Amino acid sequence: MTSLFVPPKPRPLPQKASVWQRLSIGLRSGLSLFLGGSYTDLGVGRHRVPTLPYFRMRELFTVRDPDLIREVLVRRSEEFPKSGLMDEMLHELIGYSIFVSNGEVWKRQRRIIDPALEGARVKEVFQRMADAVEACVARFEAHADRADSTTAPIDVDIEMTHFTADVIFRTIFSEAMTAEGARRIFAAFEVFQHVAYAHGMLRLTNFPVNLLPGSGRARRAAREIREVLKGPIDRRLALVARGEEPPRDILYSLMTTPDPVSGTCFDADELLDQVSMLFLAGHETSAAGLAWTLYLIASCQHIQDRMRDEADRILEDRPPAFGDMKKLELTRDAFREGLRLYPPVPFVGRDATRTERMKTRDVKEGDIVFVAPWLMHRHQKLWAQPDAFDPDRFSSDEARESIRCAYLPFSMGPRVCPGAAFALQEATLVLAELVRRFRISPTPGHAPDPIARLTLRSSNGVPLIVTRR
Ligand code: HEM
Image (tube, rainbow, N blue to C red; front, side):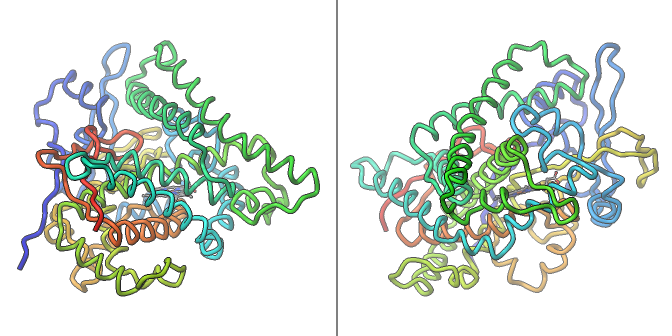
């Protein structure tokens, strides 16, 4: 029997870490902060952050009990609204859109957005996703045909970001992403992601982040991204004004679906906020999950070989069709396992709206309560071999209970990710096409270093060697 591959995970913060250690590690990545001893604990963790001006400690909590997680995210979700911290971090880019809003505003937004991402719509945009896959394969081919391809790696986290951003463009706007748009967006998003995350951490300490020079840079970066995204919206509005027939894509659904309760549609400003949010939520997460999955299958050639056999058997020599997706079971399970080991959203935050006792902790109104897919997915009491890469667990009976109670890469409850089916479809499609045409191997001597900012990425990239099959 082949032994299972155990990929890297960050070291937890030492038990006796100083305030400065905590601060500097926290500003680099949120992950280690939450970890000490927590892979075995089923209670509620408490973390203390010093606040200005008197260094009084602020308490944050992490719920690690599956039943209590359901309480927070599902049964009493209205009492645990999305944390205001997320709105503060992301407002410049996505306004008060569905990812950060709460209450009646969120309910209306969700009623309009759900139909844009429902199963039938995801089926409708299949061909546009397939076109983005072809463009991605062409970029890989160009690289694989270079004389130095056996030694010069592709940075797949950059490639997958390009791919998923292109998918979002093609499925929302029915337009491919231009090279110029890609360049502007990636440069600006890099700045925004770094500053938004670090400022979010500093906000926890009451630090006046608006005085920092990074604030201006983040504002300019958010404006730049919104400007690129506004182009296709303006073109669509002009097309409709000319009386021409618009394509039936996600933008069409967002523009024409009225809220069944109030009868209102999104106005132009709301539309730009929601499209910016879909761009952020829809490309960054999928790109992170895909880059980690490619690293895992590069490190496990026997799994990659089985995926290649599956793709050959099901797709034969023809382009993939929508009906193939559910048959590519191992490919989908490899991605699901990638999301388990490296959940792109490693923790979600909720604000407590009343003071209450949670297990052994006193949580006060206004405290932030975290649920961490990262922890639950690797919990030693909830999974067999939690740190090992094993896509077959998704088809085994033994893991059924673990998956039911401790697998939540898309969160759960009323705020569950509405893009889950979309993400699984694009991931299955691109992974099947990549393994069927290329052999993907790790770069000798390189191990990616997981860090959590807005999403879970590798601080030193994910370089992989890609050669033609
Ligand atoms: C592997 C890919 C993805 C992962 C792991 C993921 C994960 C998540 C998670 C964990 C949340 C909940 C966050 C929270 O409760 O604080 C969320 C929300 C959301 N996601 Fe995704 N997502 C992915 C892809 C997508 C895609 C492709 C789209 C759209 C095209 C999308 C759209 C959204 C939206 C609109 C929300 C906000 C829902 C609400 O608050 O009501 N996501 N996602």
